[in-house]
Image (cartoon, rainbow, N blue to C red; front, side):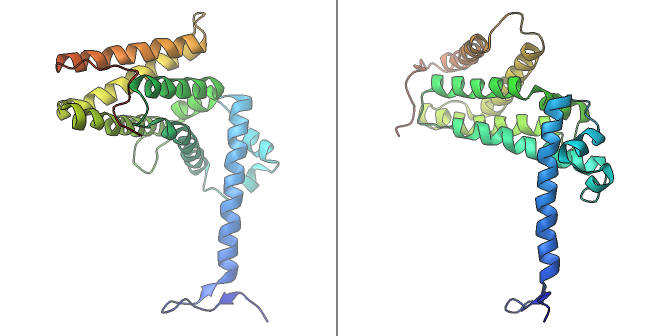
Length: 230
């Protein structure tokens, strides 16, 4: 007897077992093709072709498009995966119990090392300007999400030190834009500046801005001292 139709959930319609299994298999195959696309981009650069992605996945181009409704949907799936990888790498950095110096340096180091190791992926996202579910490009999405994390972190300064809450959002977005522009230019043309030296420079510049904001509020904060107790 076929098990194609499973018993219905309480109060719900019957569940088609074959459809559920096909949906799961479809998602697994899509995920495998996206991972193959990431490898192909790393191998061939930002101008990678669909044929090269299919070859990396070990299938024909037509087989690839059985799982994606065209190049745009494939690009969106790639963008969503890269966005998740970036945020997974950065999210553990935002620990308010660490000192400002540690938080800043760790965030900058994570960002620069990701850029140097996956620059082709970053350039691919910029080149294709892939639109995400938010309606913006994935690069802008990541910048916004990082800035939002920084806003939440700086909210600790607002709560504990009485900073002007109105300036936190423009300050956070400004710092993220500065670091992104400086890091992207450095990856393209490092001018002999090694990665750890660039990390030190960016961390120093960021703290200089933050320290200036704090001083304007009449506060002298030690960057080596955590604001929040573990």
